[in-house]
Length: 143
Image (cartoon, rainbow, N blue to C red; front, side):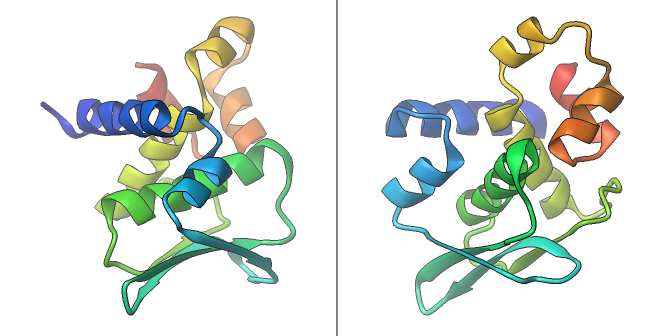
């Protein structure tokens, strides 16, 4: 099984386990603390310290982008539990494996099949712009 299929199944597992696809509600159920504040150039970050998981979200982010960033950081909390990760707001395709995995986790969580069906006229660029993510993540999600 490749990384994409593994991540897709992991997202589906947590959605079933928690009974929701809302990354904020999933974090709450998993006892992951979420804080908002000014983070400058960072969209969000995930920190692990003394067996405590915490997600920080830039308080300037809203709408669909907020969901994408939250799901991205949740992906780190689940897949990269002991690594501290910072998500830059430059929306470029990231070379780091952990960042690509977190992006794909987020894409499977927030860019749902229903969304894709309802917005079939949207291009990958349109979806990437809406969610504040990169084109390659959207393309990978749609393939």
